[in-house]
Image 1 (cartoon, helix red, strand yellow):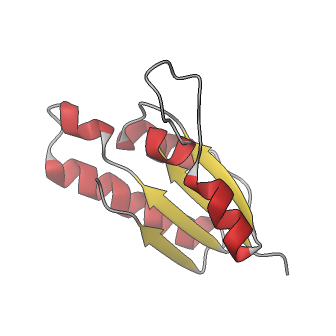
Image 2 (cartoon, rainbow, N blue to C red):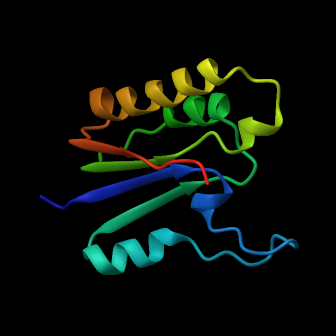
Length: 110
């Protein structure tokens, strides 16, 4: 069985590193090299947890692991913390129940 990792998140996952949005260096490149595993980078700059959850539910691929870094962009809105936590929890549960994920990992906000 081929082991695959889903990396879901915002610009921090996508790899945004400059103010012109022209250069990206995602952590997933290094992760894939170190683990010798396929890593699908599903980072979208500026995305908040509600649209991220919606986008995740469109995913049909199967994964072994999921790494989710979400909530950073929700900080600059009036979104309640409990709503952000609820969305992140739903993302992890969706991965476990529908995408074949054995373990999901939650990365904390910087």
